[in-house]
Image (cartoon, rainbow, N blue to C red; front, side, top):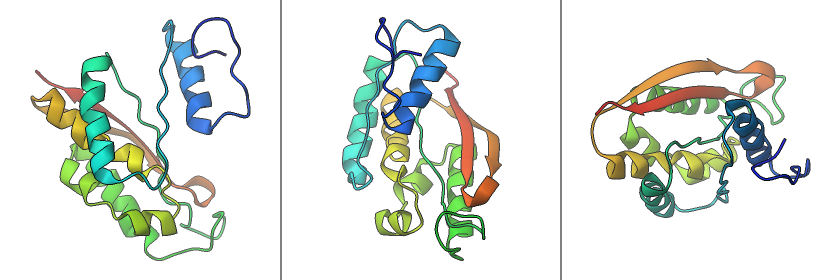
Length: 158
């Protein structure tokens, strides 16, 4: 697996980089560029990055996690605030609801293990810069082993 070229990907890289390399290879793309955001990246900085990415890329893959404290098998102790936050994420991704993504509270996300909050907040910038009408499709949303994962696609319609 590589991100492009011939150098193999170091298995010690962050998980989003490894997933990008795997998907790049499966899609047959010649290369993939990865941008990692720190969990504490401010929402406004994430939005600006999203705006800049529209001009640079033919497509965009945003990797982010849901809560990791949703049950007894979770890596963190269960927290009753996890279900409403995961529902906010699920709805935002299914409905291309950029307002719900902008409203993600950095502190709450940190407390509930949503380390990808900053990556999710790139999406409002993408939609704003991309213009047009967008359609979302939630492909998967579940909580295996106490960690919630959502998979969705967003497509510009015009």
